[in-house]
Length: 272
Image (cartoon, rainbow, N blue to C red; front, side, top):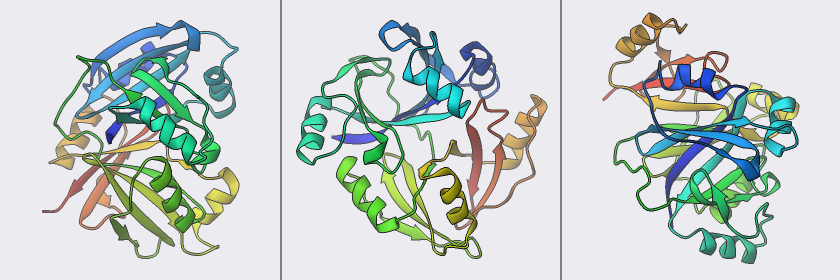
């Protein structure tokens, strides 16, 4: 069973430099830090409530992660979902005709892992992980939401239902933004499908230029956004004042991906 997002993976040039932001500025605790020799990466997991952020630093140049970093720069690499049966997930996906990268589970930083080919998920690299006994666990909320830009809203809903078992439970149509946001809960986080509602929308133009992909961003709900903005500014991070966000009753401010080593951090507060 898939019960939550385990982590988002971010490819970085220098994990130690990135820790200066995620650990020292954001205050996230490191739960794992080791080199996975067969994959040619140093991986670092940092806890954020029920979820984690994984930093991936290539340790040699002949790997897929190294090539991804060279072509795309520091950015989100994959989304990983936690499961209690990775073998069963692979069997289910094979039966459904989903194209896989891994036919069998292998050892990874998050436990026993396997990847789905991004061709099967509208450009998103999806990982499944079965965590080992004693791994980090928390009942605290971590990510509020992640976003995935898709060209065909109906097809994307069917794909995410087949591959991950997620269903759209709500929709938001922000005024003047030319998009629909389909909300798929997963644990305490929501995976958002962002689809254009017209060919002339900014989202449609971006998809035409960049293709369908996951946004290199995580949103984190905070109780007092003004206080959080002040805390980050005191540590040298540049943020705008909070402004109304696309979700109902929300205000947001975002740490840019340039400051977040390729991952934008959106702070979001909801009016209650």
